[in-house]
Length: 395
Ligand SMILES: *[C@@H]1O[C@H](CO)[C@@H](O)[C@H](O)[C@H]1NC(C)=O
Image 1 (spheres, protein in one colour):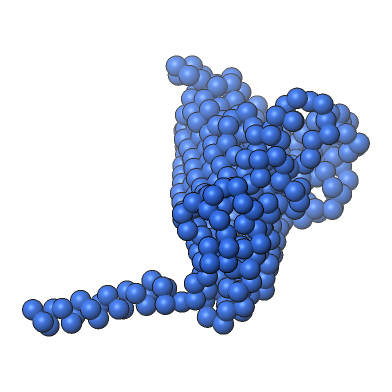
Image 2: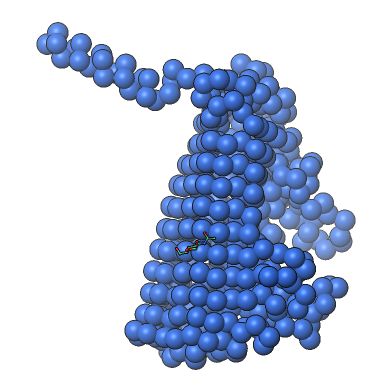
């Protein structure tokens, strides 16, 4: 008996060390943060962060239960060691508009080895959405709730993000990011509340994540390479979007993006690649894209490539009457199924000057609700179909 106890004790001690409790922990409450949802705790969070960031050993900033009002939080590195922000409570934005605009509300910049775990961030975007909906103009741009910038080796896990003013999560200029078990929710009518936006980043994985929002669930911007999106559910929302590239005259390409095991319910688009119909772009491309094992339910454009994108007659961008200079190649769709809400379930509207090449369709079953046949349309698209493909391939 005594022997077992000694054993358990040793095991317990071992687990204690492993669980990281022995590492440096900085509780925001001991820096003066108030869990009442009314007192701005930005200063306390900043102090806790700089203490953790200076720590020579891996450090944790701990946010206990309760609601913490943050007017804005900029967590900047580089830090001396790995830092984890561990949240049990809720971080709430101010009730009006978040200051800092497009610079973001909660921002991590140059923090290699960052982990953000648990908790809820509430962007309280209602006031801004109402301003935009009123259509009088003069609304601020709004803030992205969580921005991770210029960082390597980042994990964001078990986080809930609700009601962002603008995007929920943005990853920009990063290498090696894992986003897992994240829940994102905003009303289907909320404007520009994209779920996760990735750009100028490589080796990003988004997994086991549910996104209900008013704009794109996942949007992929220029300079994204080796992105994996797996087991993501989307809806309401606008689907998974690539682009729109080609608005600026110099943009980098997108290469090696895989979307696997996604489920879309009632979204406006499913798997969409869109580019501006604009000729003056240097070297922009989209290639090496895999969409596979995806269930679609009631969406207007389950599979779409749209290179004629030109809203508001171009707004000075030079389109219409131009064709997109963005070259799209090697895009494979495999095992995509479900009822489509629109007659045209597959639409490849590619550039006349830079036709799409290497499009692959395999095992596609998209029909109208009730099983009536849908249609596919192709313009300037080249590729091949294999397996059972419905609607019949137009490639
Ligand atoms: C994309 O994937 C291919 C094949 O795995 C690889 O050869 C290529 O280097 C990748 N591109 C980038 C930018 O990593």
